[in-house]
Image (tube, rainbow over all chains, first blue to last red; front, side, top):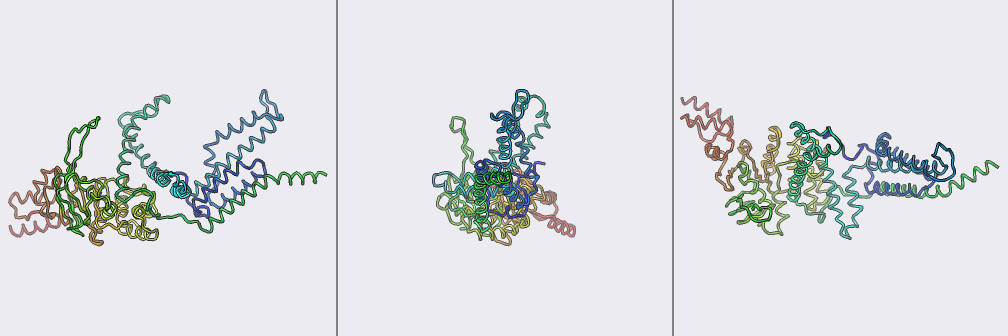
Length: 279
Length: 286
């Protein structure tokens, strides 16, 4: 059971989005998130929705996988919507008992709900189309300039990728220790929260000891294979920007510009049209 | 001088109590001498705690001698400037396959060694392909190591070492955690490397069946080398081996017991085939 867990939530498919350089995907996701905070009206969000839909279509990942990520924040989303709906001061729309729903509240609630869901879906697109390994590679390369101010970028990336490699192994080990303890009468299920937490101690101690032993072995194996940090190191799969990567950057850039322009001018244009239509 | 030469090697583990005072000293390797020629298949046998793993760790400069000297390809392991040369010349495969695979994909793990050595990208790919083919794991190059069996993981570890183009590979109990099938796979891969690529192999093990193909066998006990010779010479000392708590192959024991009872059977029978021939001869004579 534990052997089959996939890390992160990578979805294997062959699409242009999958083939993009991880740096492009990281950068674009950041730009997309920033754009969500820059846009403040319906027009901007319309542009964002169209852009997101286009990327999802290109990625060939079924839409239900994008929605999966939403489940985790559903509760947070509800709270945000409810609080904004009832607690925003302004022009009252409906009054139920002591609670008032204002016009501003409705607007803010819709805006925040959209912002949050776009944010989650947007980052899901990145994690669904990029393997954890590509992500660490991309981060290492992007943060490269920080080496100048003595940030151990290579080491951080190496730690992340080793952690990713060992999570399934440690999960399997936890399972094994748990079964061994259960066989000798341990009880992980019953009791209140504190009791349950206490019963985890005999599970965690052997797990930690074994993790340290593994770390020790791994360090020795890495040294035996000439590992000496990031210096002199070459890459088996180096990152190179290709034509499609530059095109992607241009597209994301133009998305941002169109979004900003739209949220500035579209309401004016729309107002104008409506005014003319009325008269 | 051979590819690996060990002279008067002594290594001590110092046990300390909580304040850091010396509680006792265990001599793990005691006055060991070895001379291994290029292209040899050498086996080092010994039960747990005999010092065989400690000795192995000296051969690629993970441990440094307390006394004596180790030369790998003519280079003294104590000299820091040779450290990376030595680790590249003498590759090492460890016991637990899970704790030595670094990559999340088979091919990435095999490429790890060459990456560290600064091999150009194109050549890394060539080396990865050739090493994976040498151990018969090429079709698994895109798999996750977590999905492989023990024997397959250990073959990937071996490929990871060969990709560094070593002259010598040291295997520190590579089969201890494997099932019989996995053990066979690994030993077959190791023998092929020795036969085809002429890589020097130093196999450390406590499974006797694995050493019958070796050119030379060393048996260790309490840090010292107590027996050495060809497998046949070593296996004719059945009683000595039993005293050292080593399991002698069943055929060898049977032949030995029959010999003791006065049957005309030669010393040091290693395989069932040899035993069958010996019995046939025996029957003709009687």
